[in-house]
Length: 399
Image (tube, rainbow, N blue to C red; front, side, top):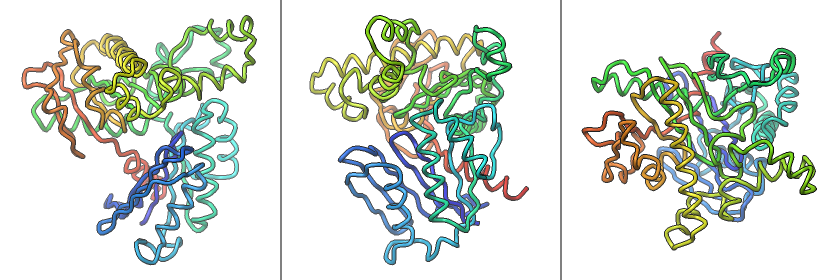
């Protein structure tokens, strides 16, 4: 069964065409920096690698570019879209409506659209991916896998806010958590790796997903018990354009004293803050490059980012009552040795001892970057949300 996975992020599209149940990747690739003049496009098979830098204004243009190459006479891997039996879509916010993988219907699309207010950088892109895929892969089953599903195990003491009870019971306002597909995938890989390497049955893990969107999750016995993103994907860590945690009274001050509208505040916190607001750049590669050249704003932003991550490591180690491993994953977590070093420096109390030489090694495999004497393992595990989504889509269709 050929399943294409479409993972539309806030500024990126990752995709894989996978033959199931063998988990054989037929082709893969991604587009990042969507909306910029210098978007990067890649398309990779066993025999072909296409890389281009070109302006890709939005997700619709990007998805059409992907479909064209899939069926290209020279580099394509399918002759007709009818060869694809299912399309698996990553959808960020499922609210209280979706706790499991579902076949997409008109009603499902409408609920995803309604939840866009809670994930304005993601659900609209996810929904657009679904609509375009329905046009391109018209014979395929369309299936949604929700980022919030993995976090349904978070206990009430952690997912309930200290607001009047009816807001939870009637309005479903609670911590939902995001990046669940990634956190689930890498935590399972970590537990398997630690067991194979005679570290015992590890059950206390912190996963650190760092990309344009960022989140951390405390995972005990393979289950999410707390996570940094809450009701909507904008709190917690400092992100590419999102502020992360701010004092809510700032919002009232901006509206009541500074003359901002609520829409303007929302736009500022979602799209003009985070690393972009601190530096003028939203891409960490640009920020690290300018920091190395002496840009003080970029240097401070990197330090602030690492400081916020350290605070959550401390709080989650307390919640877990111990720590077996910390996992770095996603675009920044996997590729930025500098950010990993900033996070792991002066963390001896938590048993984190970074091996500088190992930290500089690049690999697509699971790897330790801690010293041999480190009490806590520091792992870099490439996430593969697409494989995780494919497995869930395949299981749904079989049943």
